Length: 222
Image (cartoon, rainbow, N blue to C red; front, top):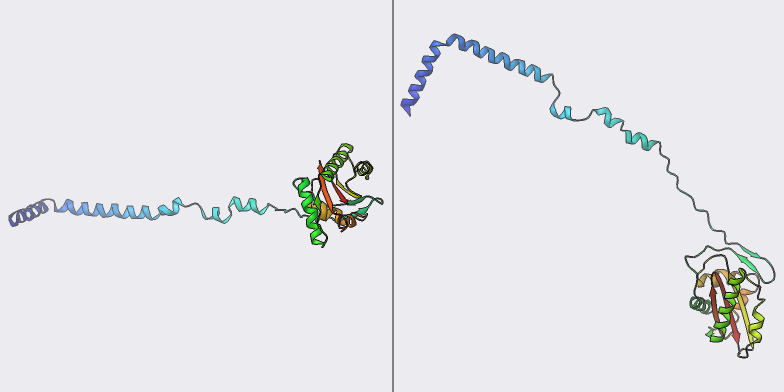
């Protein structure tokens, strides 16, 4: 190792003696190139800055300008008007919001008994005879397209011998309603005797009938 090292030094010294002048200029030339490189590189923007979008792009984005012109308007819901109007001695016109579907006869019967319980009145027993009459009367309202004002009720009352007293209340034709709403928002708000009829403690039997958007409830007492 020492011999090789000495020989290397010797060769370097020998080579240095032969080209001492040109080597000086070569070093100067290298320094000069390095200086030019630094000067040229200093005038360029850093890589990160050149790849980054201009600052004014972030200060005034197009999305913000578009959103600033948008007006959001939320619809306001007006409260429902729960009006009640007496049309004649038998007919009351009530306003109530429609339900998603129409009541069934069983649902109407249950709603009637729940109403009577809430008003401390005896519940009704279901009668097949009254159920048949109620369904027939509901179908008659639907066929006629309107309430008949109890015009067809008398014939059913006279053609039976099971009950000594019978009564009838009618509802609907305009829109679907749950049974509980027919009883509590319809007949209970009546100005023509329907409320008194459905809360009468003398009734012992009853049944409801549904056809289309029409509802009928028949009462009976023995």
